[in-house]
Length: 66
Image 1 (cartoon, one colour):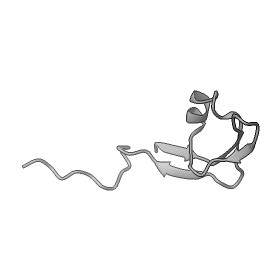
Image 2 (cartoon, rainbow, N blue to C red):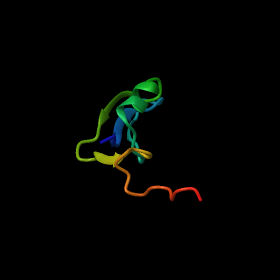
Image 3 (cartoon, rainbow, N blue to C red):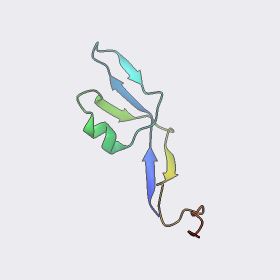
């Protein structure tokens, strides 16, 4: 099953202040924006697992074309 693993992150902002994201992000997103999320660490207990849209396990399928 295709899943997304998302967390809230604790990071140091451009002013040197420690902050926590109010949104969820994957590890890949944090790596891609490493210049923004310096020294980012996953916030323990914030993991949310979601199915990827369009995975073969989706229960909602489009109706067949007429």
